[in-house]
Each structure stands twice: as C-alpha cells, then as structure tokens.
Length: 229
Length: 64
Image (cartoon, rainbow over all chains, first blue to last red; front, side, top):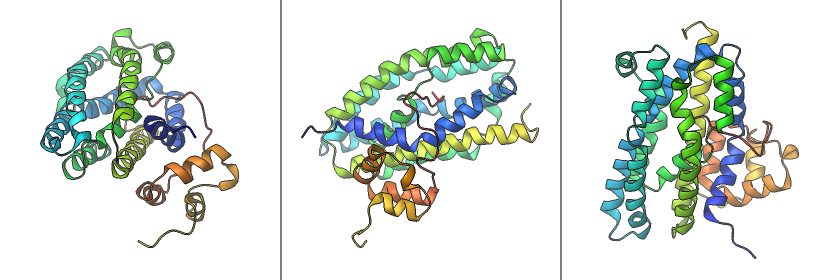
C-alpha cells in the first residue's frame, strides 16, 4: 500500500478543518463595504506579519538548543534561517501599503494589537518554547499553503478601487507563497516525524484556522456596528 | 485516558461538530485516520463545525 506523504496528510486536515475559514473569507471578500474594511484587515495582517520573523528566530533558537539530540530539530534550523531571510521586511511592505491607503505608519505601530492576533501568534511562542519548534510548520502550512491567487488580488483592486501599490504585499505573496508552500511540503516530507510532532503540527494548524476565522469575523462584526471607519 | 471505543467521526458527531451523513467517504477516512486525540479534543472544545460548510477544491486563506 502506498504511504501517504506527511505533508499531504497535514494538508488534508487543513482542507477539511478550514472549510469554515474559506467560508468566512468568502463572506469577507464579498462584503458590500469591502473597501472600507480593507485598511482594518491590512492592519490586522500587519499585527501578525510583524511577528513572522521574530517567531522564526525563536523557533530557530529552540531548534538549535534541541538539535544535538533531536534530528527533527536539527533539520529545522537551516529551514528557519533561510525562511527568515525570505520573509524579512515584509511587514515594512505592509506599512507602505497602508500608507498608500492613507493610514500613517505611526498610527499602525501605535495601536494595540487585538487579543485574537495575540492568541494566533502567542500560541506559537508557547509551543515553540514548551513543546517543539516543529509546531511552527503548522502555522506556515495554513498561511503559505493557501495564498490568495494573483487574479483574486486583481479582483480585489477592481472591486475596491484602491491603488495598486496598496496591495503590494498581497500581490507579492500570491506568487512567493507558492514556492514557499512547495519548500515547506518538501521539508515536512523529509522529516523523521514522531506521532507527537504530527499531532503538534496539526493542532497548531487548527488553532491558526480558528483564530483567522475570529479575526475576519471581528472585522465584519465591528464594521456592522459602525466601529470600522 | 481510557481507550476510545468510538471512532473519531462518532465522537465528533456526538459533540455536534459533524453531521456524519453529510461527510463523504474520503472525509470520514481523513477524520478517523488522520486526526489525533489532541486534534479531536480541540475540534470538540472549539465546537468547530466540520463538513457543514461548502467544500472546495480551490480555496485561499487570505492571510500572509
């Protein structure tokens, strides 16, 4: 019998458990006031994206500590090192995108990030420190495994009429994340994962899905109550 | 924890997380074979409604 690849098993779980996320995402992008919601959405993406590199640095440090006795951790070190370089300064792109929408960077950086994002990111720090840095692969499997396709970014611009430069980060990731997804799947398939690693990656991915649903729900709920301007 | 005599799908159905009758055979196999104990518990505690939303082959997370 043919063995299921480890990445395939993870992605199948994400596909099934993510059905609510895909549904909420669709509702968000079909929202009649999408243009008004966009700056708030990009602010929340920034809250998370500013943590991507620091998260990987934390995961790399922990993986390095474990690496002598842990072959999975040892394989994660170069992956996180390289991926840190690839993701470097993308939060800066997003600040520029927001500036193109008239949102000043000082107001983005000075605003308190909401609890939903803290939970999204904070859980990863916990698992990296107290369980295993392999948890972060579950995060990337959801985020980089399902990037917005370029044609949807074009549709977003047409629907909202925002300047193209306001969507640079989404455009770039529509292309970049396809390569990152392939690299991630190759890495996952190359690891000698134990059942606890597989479980941790899965749990991490499920938590990311839950929190993204809450974040998108939050934007729509606040917009409905007149709290997004 | 005591060994589970029920399948994952049965446990999730009992908790109201899935409706087994709307799941495809492939989805039932994924839930029963791929989801670990901690993941099943997570789905029950989050009360995530698996398989009750339209399933798509193409989707995206819109988060980068």
